[in-house]
Each structure stands twice: as C-alpha cells, then as structure tokens.
Image (tube, rainbow, N blue to C red; front, side, top):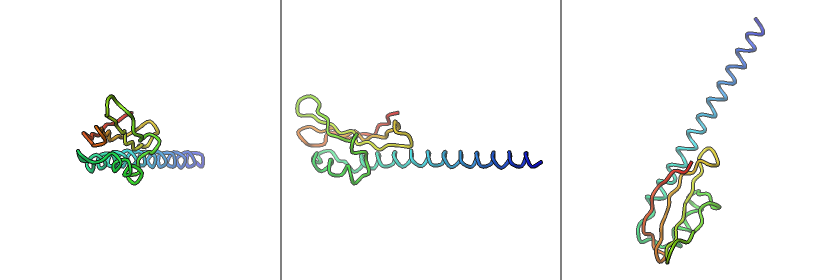
Length: 111
C-alpha cells in the first residue's frame, strides 16, 4: 500500500509540474505575440528609422536579432523579434524602410 501511495504522489507531482510548464509556455507565446502586434500597431508609415530603432529595446525585443538589415537601393528592414517559450519560437514585427522612413510593418511568426 505504501508503494502505491508513493507512486500516486510521484505521478501527481509529475502531472503538476507538467501543467506548470504548459501554462508557462502558453503565457510566454501569448506575451511574445502581443508584444510583436503592439510594436507593429505603434509603428506608422512615415516614422523615422532612428525613432523605430530607439523603441526596440524599450519594447522588450531581442536586440541581437532586431538589427537593421540592408535591402536593394535605399531600402532597409528590421525584424523586431520577440522570443516565445523556446529560442526558435519567434514573433516578429517586420518593419521596412525606404530612405529612412517606414513604408510598412507587419507581424510574422517564425518557428
């Protein structure tokens, strides 16, 4: 009987731990998604590139992944990245610039 009780307690603890991990994963993914959507909502066409880049750190984005990247001509883009529960779960607000002005901002999910 004591063995069954120990097995039941171990099983309950395992399930409780699994539930906590699942809840944390859901929270982390939802939080990253909301931050990416909010950053895109706050980024308006015509905003200056310097102003957008300054907002990256205060928004809680991953600074290593959120750098200005050159495209053709005078175009640049910034993948403003918010990491979810796992390192490869990224919620991104991609911001495109032309002549240092925002031309578009859209949310994407990279898994």
